[in-house]
Length: 415
Ligand SMILES: C[S@@+](CC[C@H](N)C(=O)[O-])C[C@H]1O[C@@H](n2cnc3c(N)ncnc32)[C@H](O)[C@@H]1O
Image (cartoon, rainbow, N blue to C red; front, side, top):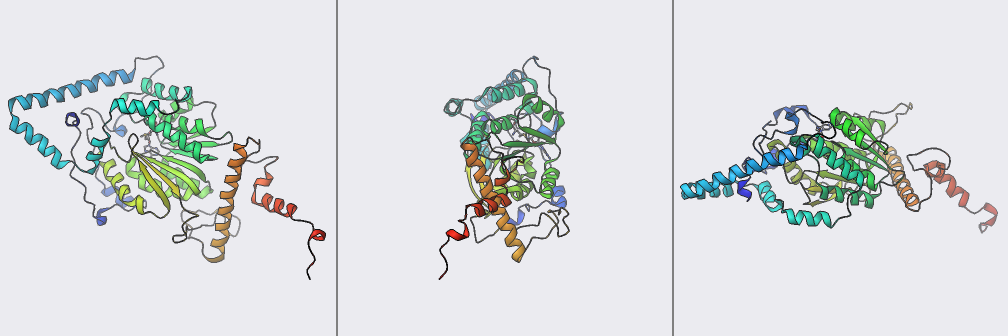
């Protein structure tokens, strides 16, 4: 039934590395990118082409409206192919032959992933059921956002996976880039440790408006701004995250990935959505560059999970690969002012070594924090302040170590 899906055909992309877009943010490269938009289903515009709309509570379901419409499209295509087979078998075979010849890697993957509803239901039913919050965010999006945009929500099976990964990583500070109406965010929140905090970035105020309505009262902050500008500001402010979920405008994912890696603690987890299914040609080209680059990027360990639109699971190797040591930057200048890390040169020599140690200490503090949280001891985290938290600062740890050292008179006297 794949043939009934009238999505745009693409020539197989040239995998010559000279054609790869560089990963660093470069405005001139951005301009040269093609701005083709594929009609995945005729009449369905790319998300950015439709105005963001949230309907009133209780309006007739946008999802039901769309399902009826897409069924009409499927039916028309099935009838066209049946008609062609009956009237001109040669043309019918030629069309199928031509289709198979022009399938590229992505379409082959899509063929492999074409949703088998029974299997998908089984996968969802084999996962811990969604909480009422997750259900509310998903259903409200489907009911109140026109389906052309609502369908950009991540699949329930992806949300279950995300929630389980968060429960494994136990992050103190989590970041959701491109949060849309907050469905993936609700999955992260449901697995976050009690003292954990989630920051969400989304460029479209209509979506952050709905997300903050649906997740009111939870430990989450919504930032309505462009992702790149926000990630750069975080770097300058010295903000760090233990878990990052990336699901925004795919042509920028390479740049977001690079920038997010600077914010990820050593050993931190990053996941990227949209690795295998692409609504536009632009998205496909950008993600295929990442297919080539991520497996050999020494800054991460990674594996791809063919769940939903495809998830890349990455763990920062910043503290485990001596052959490609991470670069360290001063977060403060000698005069005490806050350094602009984006334009600062990397540290070298003793200064880099001190910064590396500080970074490692931060990692250990985050681990201690998670352990304390898992044991249910009501102490704040490395990111928190107030009574009881001083032992979790690096100065506090030094003080603790000093306090535990036996007093001088108990030490054996030097001979
Ligand atoms: C595929 S949707 C994310 C779906 C979301 N993860 C969920 O589970 O519901 C991508 C989102 O990225 C947002 N986006 C696009 N360009 C952006 C940018 N430059 N900065 C921040 N967000 C952006 C879009 O508005 C959209 O809401």
